[in-house]
Image (cartoon, rainbow, N blue to C red; front, side, top):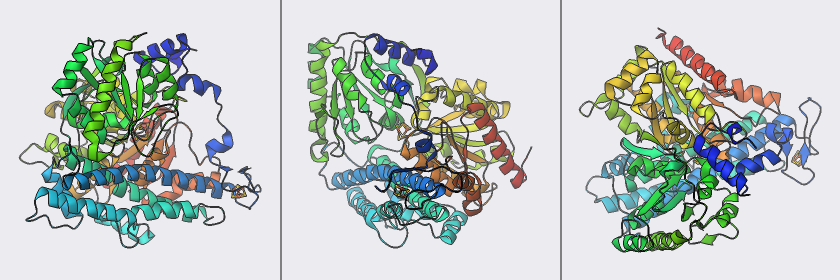
Length: 624
Ligand code: NFS
Ligand code: SF4
């Protein structure tokens, strides 16, 4: 097996080779054994009832046993992906809300209200009057209000009102404003049950409502409440890639999505008693690094180093230098268990919602979270003397993270006139051609990381300011695109702007739930004025060139429903039906002023994004 075929990341290559040599199986080994099925991949395999399963051809004649056509089957499957993705983000948000509630009531040791300014802003957007309330009382009200919005049956979820007026009118007209977060997800599952909603446009409209309940609901709640608990990010310098693991330290990796327990682990590793224990076993200290979105969360707020993106999770353990890996929910490969058993790593599942066979389960209970965190650190220290077969790749790269939509204001506008005015002006005068969000996963079916890097280089060279989140952000960081020096690769206009304020041309905006920050940034641009009255008029585009998860589909759909056209690479789950593809790749425009596109080639994707941005500029009359 040629490791270079999978990525140009040298650290990853070295670890693929190490695992191959040591007979350890990883995602890169398994992906070669598994062939994709064209029906499943294109969306026309239906397993919704046991008159089937039915694989349906897109020839206008074929249908499932119940008569379901290719477009119905693909639409139902697509909508179920949205529901699952929205559920994942929203259930994460629910957990954060419960912790905020407990923290406000003084029942969650280690947690406190860190960002009162954000708390006030969020309270007001939820319709709560903050005046005269102390921070704990206010946080309690905020948590209760947010929790009620999950089970709300009628009306509208609150953050919808943050969107530009014109966008809200679009949703109103279509009848797709989410009533309650859980309600829309449940209804999506109901509608896609055998024999319910079988008209693809009608299905997709509810798919949009479900996605909006994620973007302007679950994801946004997760982001905002995490900011309240842990602080709103500001620019911070850190390091990325497997080289951040330290040969002479106890290494603990936090992996998954909810930054709750990881924040407590960061507290625990400062404990003098635990540090003394680490020194007693011959370690110089304790090093915490992150993987996936947990990494992005604690990177954004604390500058904790990032060991890697989703495809590097098994490889991190294969360095032989990881004493403990702590996981919670989402993007955690079952293969981790097997890999951990081949080294000295103790793997911990910590969420009540997720276990792995044969893996230690030490549940994070926020009432006694700090104790759980200390127990994990203690057990990691105990593993340190058992190290063998250690090989840590040298690769590590600097990056700057921490670009919340609030921060972007300060960076561009300065502390005294913080606003989006300078960004809008630079878009209008053409120094910045437009803005592209490059987000989402990595996928071993494509040359991972390379698609992100190729695409982003092409975009910045053409003066497109790039905002990144999720694993895309980690991959771009590894390529050195998240440092101010990367401005040298940018076109002259974007370069000038970056150099004037000392920012990179690619801004790390956080984890995948933080894509909600991008909705807010887009909204701020509209509200600042001069670039249209709706998000769909702004020279913006989104993409996920290496996507793989259902969450990515939910995110893509809430961007599209919010007026941002979105491109996905790899394969696309509607291509098994020409009719449905015509709708998502074009017809959707008539409804929400944006659509999806599918483009596996990163250079072609960059061209499509630039052409899209140029078309928006032209419509605004600002083509230069
Ligand atoms: Ni997003 Fe973040 Fe990564 Fe994909 Fe998974 S970690 S939530 S789903 S793989 S970007
Ligand atoms: Fe087949 Fe229809 Fe059942 Fe799907 S719902 S498996 S298409 S019979």
